[in-house]
Length: 564
Image 1 (tube, rainbow, N blue to C red):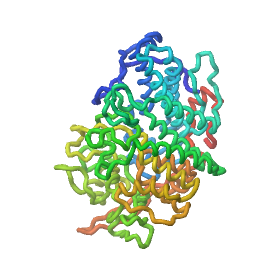
Image 2: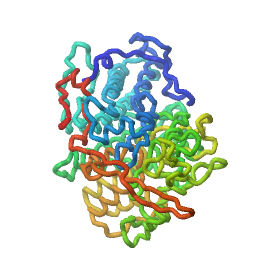
Image 3: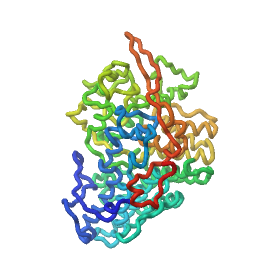
Image 4: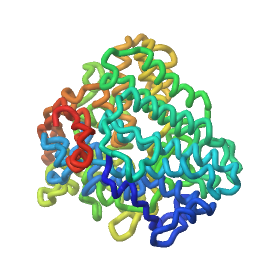
């Protein structure tokens, strides 16, 4: 299943979060091996074991690694959302046809199974542990059930069929195990979600809040799993299971089950969309109005860092590496402010002034030529025209598409490489906007474009400053609008990469040319010309990740995913 050293050797180390406040994830041990009776016989140590298991949510970077998978690349660079300005970045294995068992990327296999083992150890040992008061054990076990479900889901969405690990394995057992079926995997993850929902209390001791989302009132419990995050995971799980990649016969009951799961969360009325003003700072946990906010259902630990700005700011700003360059294909997905796509001849779109009267989210999420970046003394209009301040021929990091990513970045004027932005930023794993879109998609597939489908999508559009969807859409038309809404609202958040796969549309969107915008300035006039940045390769095998050769060498019964 995984390398034995990950299965049988657990050594605890002091966990240090550079630049962040103390929270429940801090582990009480000093460096060195810890006897088992000391782990489970002492309250803080037993709790610390579960706390340490949370690390798997963010890998070695405690969450920031999703912002920097390698050399500043994010998963959007392996979809039609963006191009990485570093053309030699290994993420391009996913784009150029060289992605293979010997050349993997975003390979979380061993890390996730190691985290699963820790949750299983806690589930097995916690009932007789020294956790005090003993009444806390049920809720902590509920968190462990969520973590086990989450780690299995992260494996499932990458590899499809996986080996279910619902207990710890002993050194004498055969670990050369075949993978479980998709049906078995989905069933088990769903059961673990249900256990988490039933066991996690509505209130953590000392929090004083009845809200199942973390509103920041109890800083020592920030980042813990809640009832609603288990519901959000179940919603995402069942949506994937109902999608064409796993639902070839289009079983409508699966779509209805996915809709029901999302509706259960929505009906609790414990989460909501941020308003249009606070929306800009949804990922900024330093701003009081949006700190641990109602839209975020679950996020990793928030760290003080300027690495996200350093990796992605336009190159004309101090220290900016401009890694994530949005594509023209993504930009074209943003509608006009009248709600019409730019492909509609009546939309009012002007190719000579392409960013005028566009969906306000275009300016929130993407830096384009002429848009203002930063505040205060650093504020200026961005120049991505050929030879502009942010697209000089002399800088190899300059945008490859004519755009830079704005989403996630701080606009504070104090940012530069030597003066870190004072922003505590997590990776947001689940937020309420996704739940609304999950519900809309699943319900539309199950029953068509009902009033409830409209309502779910329109909440997001109205918050963004866009008009509601036109009445009378067919199921197919609504499907297209929902998918485009996901593309726009959830851009750069790791969704598009997997959405296109579960819809079985990789050959349409990920195979062939990705485009940028070449802008030529002549005096005061600008000429805009779309162009092909690169041609990409997507094959049928790429709907799933390859299993790394070292895993297959250890456990050949896994068998490789088809085509690799």
